[in-house]
Image (cartoon, rainbow, N blue to C red; front, side, top):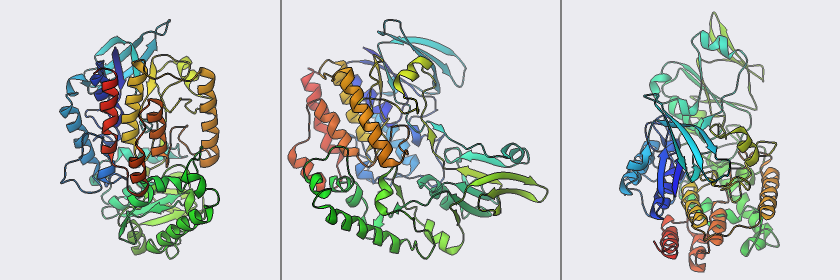
Length: 494
């Protein structure tokens, strides 16, 4: 089958590699000048590194170079993905600087017509395919607030941008920088620019918990959150096995474990001394996203090089004769030449027709995707990478196997009614668990391994009991999932 894939990040590349191995003709369209998705040079901010350690953030059959650091830089991840594409001979199938402007299904739903435009030459092209894979990611369109006074602010020489639009230190040298947000990207940027900017302020509407890379400067956090035990500390929609104990009669043990971690993080980061102690308990760290401590951030707060304006928002931006400023909701006015927003992303598919978007989303804009992969009533359309998680690259890879099995006739889906029932229940659970902060139904943190388990169970390739037991105590190894690809290819006679 001819298959078009939109996007060349982890999802797009792993999907192309696997579907190609199953004998399909794949074409990948990537609007940027390089592969990598969120790791592309066009989107990297100073100080960007992975949250995962190197050993857990690889694709199953392509480990990172041994000379990479434990937390690779954004540039190193992009090089890794470029090498992956080259190693599996995907380059010939990838069209860079090529944006999909529209994708329209045929009346009978058997074909898709895909319109593209080359961003350099402006040349337009049209092709048809039998299946459309959307792998543009949930972090594809920056979300920047429309601050009152922004127009006057920018006319006076100020700048408002997203963290992904800040690329080097020259852009901040000697300027008063105001960073909006308290997530990983915001704190990364604040730390990176603090030694170059005239001043660095962080405006944090809410304080959230952050996890040090090494607890007590000894224990790697991967042993806390990148294991099945770590996932098991948080209540999944369906409880099985030991997790029933942890959230039943064993809940005091579970609470004690989380309480000890909260105590360690509070002391290690000196949160009370810095007046940056979140008001909510540590277990809320898993409501929507998990943020690692940026190395040096709290030390620079203590030294006064970074100032955190907590429980505050920008009320308006000001351009006055004596300079440019931001007025905060607390009543304080601070200097600001550059406003950098770590305020999240829009989850959008602008290339799909309105009537298709209406079929795959609900009234709140949440994506209604069975297994975070397929819309119920739109044939020959699938999404991969719409499941932000700790092991997003493995979710993409196993998701590609799931799609390959579906296209090949091996995977039999439940009825449309059962799929919709599953989707509705999951969205309701996510809404309650995260207080609405689930990226339109696409964020599955911290239940990465649970999601992979469900996909593997669907295609009849569950992990062995021994491997699952190992993952209870140790971080999941991507190589644990290599046999799944080999076994499914053999089942399909490849």
